[in-house]
Image 1 (cartoon, rainbow, N blue to C red):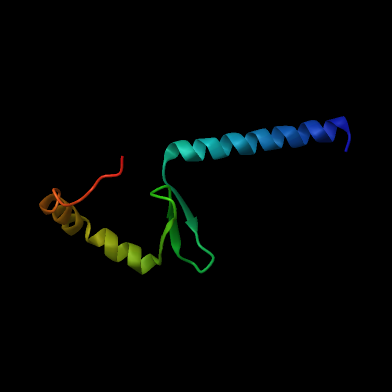
Image 2: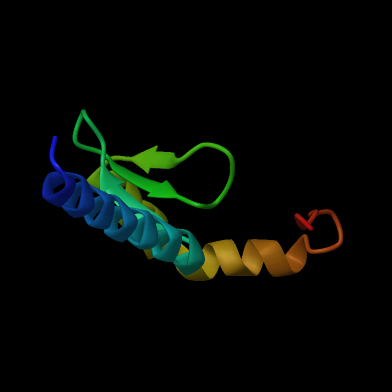
Length: 80
């Protein structure tokens, strides 16, 4: 590998590193899992992966989930 190739590779790696850092700053990221599910990264240690119809069912229950959280607020913990 000559100097030119090494400099090009270094620049590519720096750009990739910057992109990864920006992804972490955003908080949540999405990926299509190997089996076709939608994985959400950034909520906890492991991704949350559901299939499309499961996400739609969950999103359709938005108000029910918010109401449940409000009613049970004193029993629920928050991550600090």
